Length: 257
Ligand code: MG
Image (cartoon, rainbow, N blue to C red; front, side, top):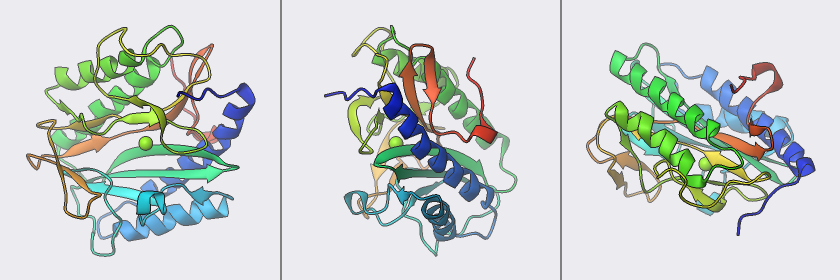
């Protein structure tokens, strides 16, 4: 069942979104060669707790971190670790979320570590573009498939693979609610999008094949061909006026056309 949120509930969710965005921004600002992913985890957790939130990822299904930290060919769900040290030229997806007042925010961004190759730069640029196109499609009158279609079209036009096994999701009092939000799809397919739905829209785009590989720790997912992958995510409410991004800080707002 898709649980729609009232305007007042969406306002409450925006508080969780704001703290999630702050944690992501501050952890992202610490990304540099020589920094461990565990250090980024500590930073995000501190921001979330100081802001009166609870790290939404910590303990979720037994996940040990407050962030997922996924480097280069790692797509999602990397466990932060002391031994994973960022190197110049890496890309790292940081995915983090906060629970505030019983509501969850969820967001991710892929950061460059120092100077990265033009190929990786392009992957990041296109994947971010995919995310904004997906968000732009999150409007009443559209269907769920319009979000995936918008994302898939841009990714594949650039020669990239769209991950199939991992998808976006509804979000509210728990992190993963119905519906699943695939990053591929056909126009006008799937459930109609309605005012009050809140979705985490999160394209995972691979430089090569869309195929994935589950790693032995049971969490980490990598590209099957070992090529890099990027991941961008925002929590978005569908309103009468269109998509409203909830994982933003007022001072760092980026308007949607
Ligand atoms: Mg998510």
